[in-house]
Length: 228
Image (cartoon, rainbow, N blue to C red; front, side):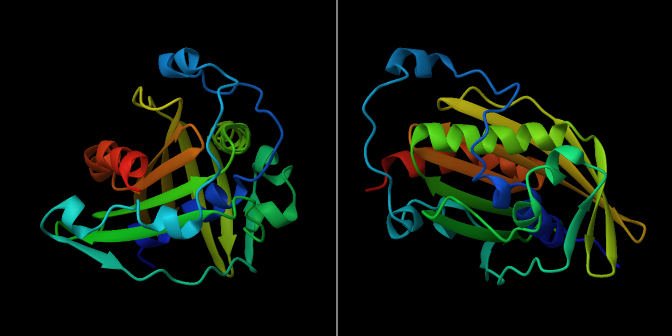
């Protein structure tokens, strides 16, 4: 079986994004950037954006440049998925571990393939909620994942060996998280970078080929902040 970046991104959404609704404060959450201190922790925040409003803030082909094609979103199906060997993830509960619940209802997502190769793909996800909800939820799941350098995910009869490594995140927004995910199955190996930036009540997550994530993160954040 060839483990493509598309497969990796889907499992990434399973094991990270589908768990972001957890509300327990992480043991070692990322430090807010300087802008967070300047704004003040209790600054008045605007109401969360609707999913329709978030959709307008997603990157599109013209934002990314020549050579990108938007790919269709496939329906999520996590009935046969199990996480093995990561107590921190397993401890979040069965529904979360299988992607059955996602507690950020205001969301939008777009995925793109690049002509540079079969592994040249990038996905952007936007969420909107209170700053505290976003911070606690995403902080916990990123910390849970990097606490398990290796574990396994089973999807039906397929067993995928997972690896996670915390990486430096750019000093953008109010809080930042970044990790490198590796997926190995059937002798095939894929690497996905995943970076999340919280700015106020907006969360931007860009996943995919490491080079493409680095290339498009700034513009994803800029558009998420400015489009009305």
